Amino acid sequence: MMADRRTFLREIFKGAGLSTIGGAVWSGFIESSAADPLVLRPPGAVPEEEFPAKCIKCGRCVENCPFGTLRLAGPGDRAAIGTPHFTARSVPCYMCRDIPCVPVCPSGALDKSLVSDKDDSGGQRLDINKAKMGLAVIDRENCIACWGIQCDACHRACPLIDKAIVLNMSRNERTGRHAFMAPEVKAEHCTGCGVCERVCITEKASIFVLPRKIAMGKAQDRYIRGWKAEDEKRLEGLGTDVRTNTPRSSKSAVDYLNNAD
Amino acid sequence: MTMMYLFVAANAYGWRVLSGNLSFAKFLEAIPLADPFAALQMLATGRVPARDVLIGAALIAVFYGLVAGRAFCAWVCPMNIVTDAANRLSRKLKLRSSGHSFGHPARQSSVEASRSMSRGVRYWVLALALALSFIMGVPAFEWISPIGMLHRGIIYGGANPGVVGGALSGVGYAAGLGLVGALCVFLFDLVAVENGFCGHVCPLGGFYSLIGRHAIIKPRYDREKCTQCMKCVDICPERQVLDMVGKCSATVTSGQCINCGRCIEVCADGRLTVRAARFPFPRFIISRW
Image (cartoon, rainbow over all chains, first blue to last red; front, side, top):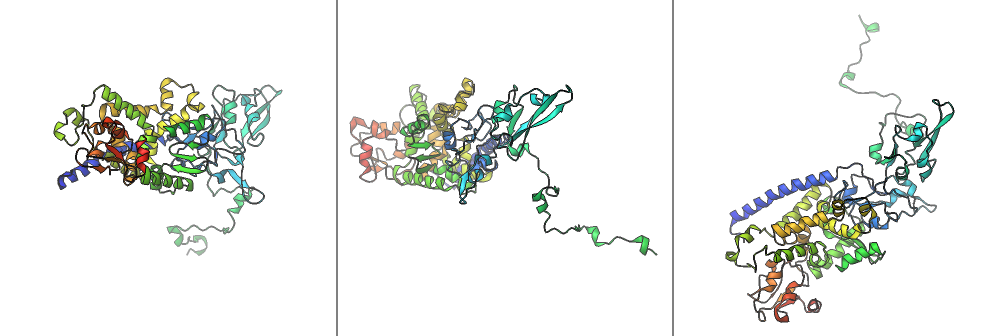
C-alpha cells in the first residue's frame, strides 16, 4: 500500500492538512452553537460552562418531564445540539415536588445535590424550591400593573407567591384615588420556573426569565452592608488599620511643619 | 431497528424496556448502557464521566469488542437506513459503475476513481474528534453527529410537543426531526462517495472498527464451494474486508466488517459459501440471518 517513505510522508502530510481544515470548521461550529447565553436549563443543572461537556444528550430528563417542558435542542435551536432546555413562554417548568427529571440523569449534568436540602435524619431530600434555573425580570415600562391598570397574573401564578413575586402597593398620584400594585421579583426565592412569563398577559411577556448569570450584577466583596450578618463576617480577623505598601510608602512623609529647619 | 422501536415505544407508550437513546439508555430501568465513543470524548475533555456512564460504556464496548464486532453500524444505527436507501437509489440510477473493481485497479473507471476516498479518513476524523474534545472541552463529535440528530429526532420527534407543536414550518419540522443531517448524508452517499459516510467518514464506525477487530462473530469464506459470482463483494459496503474472495478460504479478520450478513444472504444457490464465525457456536446465529 504505502510504496515508500515518500508516499507515507505525503499521506501523513495530506491527512494533517485536511484535519486542520476540518478541525477549524468543526471547532467554529462548536463555538457558535455554544454561543447562546440565554438558554434555560432543567432544575439542578450544573453551571452553563460545564453543562454541555457533562451532558451525554440521552434525553432521559425530557422523557421523564410530565409537562413536556424540556426538550432536546435541535439543529434549529441555538443551544448545543441535543442538550435539554426549555422555553418558558411556551411551556414553563411546573416545579414537580419529586423532580422526575433530575434523578434519572446518568452523567451528573443535572446534580441532585443542587436541588436538595437535608431531611431530619441528615439525608438528602429533594426540594424543587432550591432550583435556580434562572431569574424573572420585569420590564416596568410595559408591565400594565406598573401603569396602574389592575393585573396580578404573574403574582397569582407564581408557585412561590408572596416570596418570589411580591406586590408593592403605592398611591397613584395621577388619579389621586387609585393604587399601583406593582410586582417585584425577589431573587433569593425565584427559581426561574417561568410560570410568570407564561401567564403574562402582555403581547410579548413583560416578565421573563433570564439565566441568573445574565440577569444579575455582582458587587465586589469590599462593599460591606453593615446590616447583613454575612457581610460583617467578611470583616472578622481583619485588622482595622489597613496599610498599603507601594514604592512610595518606604519613604516616610516629611513632617515639614514641625521638623523643617 | 428493534432497538429504535423499543426506544420510540418507551416514549410513545411508556414502555420501560429501553429508556433513553443511543447515547445513553437504561435497559429494564436497571442496566446502564452508554455510547463508549461519547464516553471516550468526555474523558478527552478532561472530566471523568459519572459512574453510570462509565459502566454503560464499558458494557457496550465489551459486547461489541468481544462478541458482535461492528454490528452496531448494521443493526442499531439509524443512519444505516439512510445510507442503504442512497445505495439502492445509486444502483437504480446506475450512478456507479456496475460490478466491482476489487483488486483490479485497471478496471476502475474514471468515474469511480473520481468518487473514491480513503477508508482511513474515519480514523483521522476519530483522532480529530478526540483532539477537539480536548481543546474545546466538549465532546466534539456529539455536537455535530448526524447520527445523534437522527436518532433523537426519531425517538423524540413524534412524542415531543415542543418540536412538533411549535408552529413550525415544514423545513423547521424536518430540522427538528434531525432530517437535515440525514439528508446531507444521503446526498453525500448518493452523489459524492459510494458508502461515503458509513464506510469512509464516520468516526463512530471507525471506533467500532478498532475495538471490534477481535470479535467472535465474523463471516467465514469457503473457497472450495465458491463459484466466484462475486455477488458478495458487490453487495458488501466494506468491500476491502472480503479481499480473500476467489483466493483462499479464510475468516474475515478486519474490524471494518459490519456483520450485516448481506454477503451470506446473496450468496449463490442458497449454498452458504460465505459462512459465519471464527468459533463454532455463532455459526448457528448467523445461519439464521
